[in-house]
Image 1 (cartoon, rainbow, N blue to C red):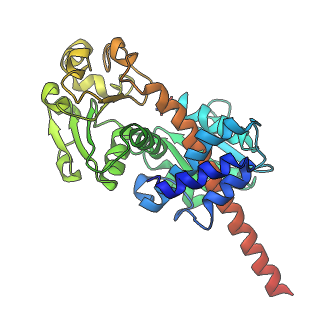
Image 2 (cartoon, protein in one colour):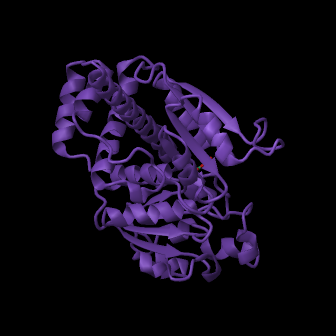
Length: 354
Ligand code: CP
């Protein structure tokens, strides 16, 4: 994913104290993403993921090091965070990333907009937003398929910030990056995802992206929270947590989604916790170097025991840091490429007019 040639080039540029903007330009070279929108991890090729990871690495290990907290890379650009469903990590990291790249970031939610009480449809809202010439829109919505629907209505790139039980592609990217940094490999990595698979967009995207890079994926949870036929996605299903975590490199605990339907599928939260909470005893069954991940927000003592969450094998806080760096990289690549395409179209029109 991040090959030695790239690491040598990055280290040399850092040593020469090349300005950070020029480092990004050099690392990016002629490479471009194959997509305008990021709606599903299925949209991304391995080359796309490699490019995003290289730029993420630059931000993580070069940006802070070099000084100015604000860059002018997206100066004059406007980014809309359209978050119809609540979020802390995704919304704030996209907002701060946009600001640090020099863009104007605007937040819009259901409350306070014409979506709620005035009854404007989502399609009409999208067309209205499009008339204001945004350079990128990040959408979170509780209904699956909304980012895809809006992408058809607007000209600018759309990034899916999580749509219902469907997908959360930037979470999958940050999780994959975290696993790669910790394990130094992805192919053959033994990963178990534990919990409410049925209602989890995180699980859906993570299984797809792990399959793409050749990791071995297992899932574990109560039968009522595992979708029928999920084995077709190439995963092994366990209902016994002790068997599921045995000899794993990564234990990924999901949040039991008490605000969604999950409560209706388990006898009680206490019972669920007894059977599936990641405890220190269960963690000992995994490989000694096993890392513990969780997308947040965490239900303490239900998804993870506090000792595990705050223990040395937990990478939960690093996931958040990597999320911010992944979103810096993605915004930089997506908005820059959109601008380059617009300039190319304008130059073609001008050439025809002369
Ligand atoms: N992991 C995640 O999407 O968290 P938020 O809901 O806080 O954005």
